[in-house]
Image 1 (cartoon, one colour):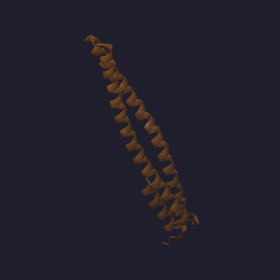
Image 2: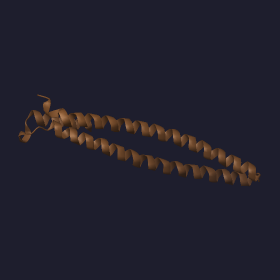
Image 3: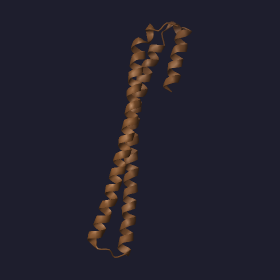
Length: 126
């Protein structure tokens, strides 16, 4: 979408649509896309955590049912459930870190690119 916006800005500036310089204006739109990317990352992270918590609760419930059928001791049940929680915590932390890195990187690049185009787009001659 960013590339399409920039090409549209270059094209509209080149044809002097409405006698305005459009590339700088598209730079501001790229900054807005960067900000929206950050917000969408926060929402996506929350959805991922919610789904992950549901999966963990289902795994715990399944393991509880299995261990109760086996008449396992309470200490063993607690140990097994703690192991499940720990494995889900570690996996969730790894997924969250990957997500934050990728979204943060794309958001930062969009903000930098958009700001540069916004600030200096009018200096580019076609």
